Amino acid sequence: MTPRSALLVALWFSFASTGARMQEPPVLVSPDVRPDRTVVFRYWAPRAAVVQLSGDFISGPPVTMTKDGRGVWSVSQGPLEPNIYTYGFIVDGIS
Image (tube, rainbow, N blue to C red; front, side):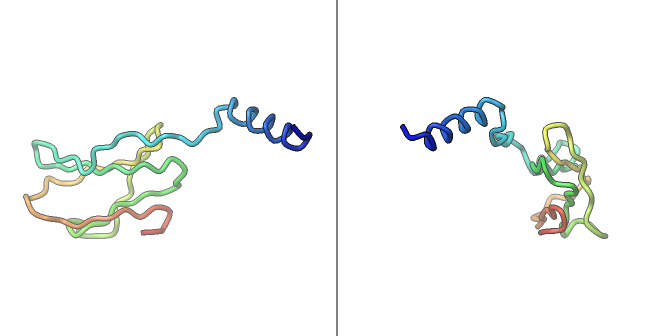
């Protein structure tokens, strides 16, 4: 093994042992339609500063979501009438 490859292997093991791995996304239910016809929307973006929900059921500007400790953003809407709705997420200003 060359000195350079030994250094690369040592750096890789050092990096891997620090826990600096990619965070695994949690399993999310979204949209989550509740019995009272409210709907919870969730989005995983642990590094985002702002996440908003837009949709044809929202009568104003996009709704800002709340972030939990796992990096999951959520917001509840409704109650909504049964229908087919379109919606999207805006993450740090990008749809």
